[in-house]
Image 1 (spheres, each protein chain N blue to C red):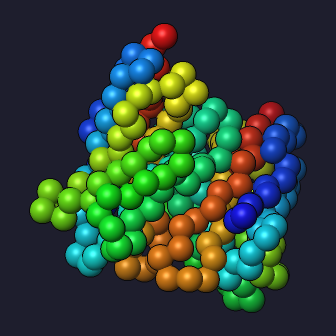
Image 2 (image 1 turned 45 degrees about the horizontal axis):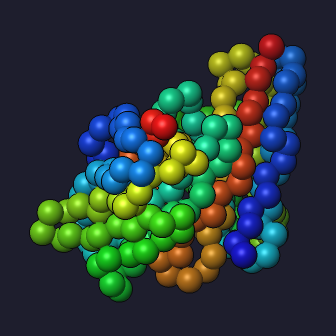
Length: 112
Length: 116
């Protein structure tokens, strides 16, 4: 069965510092992987997706993620954090039953 | 593109009331829509998968008679919380997926349901 883990329920970075949010997945089939961002009292917005094309995926707002099959990881990065990046981030994997399983989420705080 | 509209965004009502939440895909056709429930500081919990023109598929532990789902067209799915009670208070989010294989889900902005 597919599953998603996100190491670190809360991450704090200084403004301008590197953002690294970790995601590991388990899947018995080649996965479709996604990163979503959620701002308070809002739905989820797609940041980027991996669908077996390039292993380095670029998304919106300067985020990117690298798919590493050997590590079963899909970590999200951004070179320089901005105050507006403070939000909840969810990694997700699409299952063989066409459902999407979400990780527990990582709350990102940006310190001025 | 790929906008999903969810309405209403906030509902406060008395216990025993039934509440309907609408989820619309505005600029694409969605054969499949999903309904999630999210508790504070937690991840999304899939409640059911809604397929246009057929019965919804509910996840284990979700009461079908409590959470009625209708997907009458390729752009609209509704979730009705019947005879709502305080324990049904939560944040409900819908999503819609385009037809292409591997297409991501696009989410509505959620509905905050508060039952008094």
